[in-house]
Image (cartoon, rainbow, N blue to C red):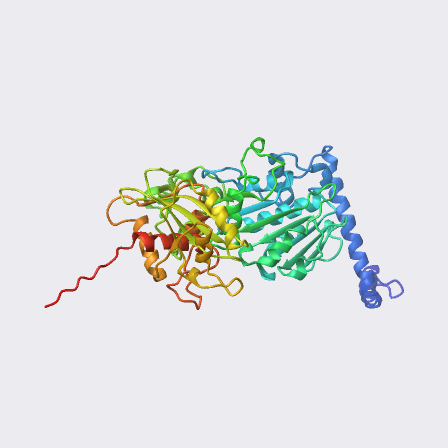
Length: 560
């Protein structure tokens, strides 16, 4: 029996413990209810700061200057200023530590670059860049990485991301937000869809292309995505929106594929190749003139970013073998081989070459698919033994185009020189044309519309040219008739090509590469070429073929 006056101690102790637990839970619940939301947020912020300090201490304890290089590790990049990349190798090392990614640095195709070349030119040399790459080639991800590099090492800096639409700008912003999630301590305010504010005064804003988004802006970096969708006036306004700081040079970068003939990207690529102040970026920085002004072209295609092909895959059974030729056995990119095979299987050859191999705009809408610069562009010079002719397409706001053409005894057509200029009276054009004649001209063929009298002067263009010493002749025809004659000269059914163009006739060559029919979704006449710029030089050439090369049918009458 147990003594009633002395009950056992164990049951009492248990009851005390349970009661104290219950009372403590109730007290904490009441305290949470009474605590304001702002105070809870402050406590949470303090905890995150303390945790960040602890992780930084852990990383700095082992060795001075050492970092945890595991991708995405918290606190793995404690002092960005001390890790500023100085070489292309540093860029890849820091990208791996900072973003958890590594960019391909090997050039595969002739005259192409690698994605790492872009980061080197963007961050180390801070140039105006024109980036032409394949679909899925990492353009958007690389632009986001370059933006983060600028924010960390060039700050305080203001960066604008412009897209053809806000959705395009937001795609680049998604990569930026993903990268910054690894470093929440860099944020000065919560991230918004259209703006990211960072510590130190740096700002990234995502905008759709418009006059309002560009006018009045004074920023250090502008990155434009899919520039083919930009309005031409907005693009012109973008050129005046950058300002430099001691740490960041004001620069513009353009990212796009090249799939539209005569589009803005096509025009920019042609200018970058032709302008003496612009050169194609080389992999070796010592070969590049860093003081060269203008847009520098950086190009890569599928073969610079495709993953390494394993030995188990046999080239004989691969759909990519025709274009790959074993290249993928030596690469180290990120584009999956299975995806490349699937894309090629469901696309046309023209689209595959334009979108994935970066060989130029799609040619299925071009008027002259037969034109090949390797065949039709030759250094044909003036020969005094061959007859010389001129062909002129009139214009004022649109340019006046004049071609000097010689006809060989074998029926070959040599275009030896060109003159293209706008906003000049016809009399001044006549003076310029006469000064460029390499020899005596037999005849000048012109647009039949030139015989119409002008409302201002009361005289026709043909009359003004004749008065200046350039007699003209013309012959009416349809556009399709002239185009067929040019096609027959480019690729005759029998024998070699009849048409050859001197390399100095750059605008005529560009016209052949961009003169196009309307796309299928357009409401325009499908068989009538679009008059959006490259038609003037082609029209002048067409007048020559109609007047000189078209056979004249003679009708003989007999009386019975």
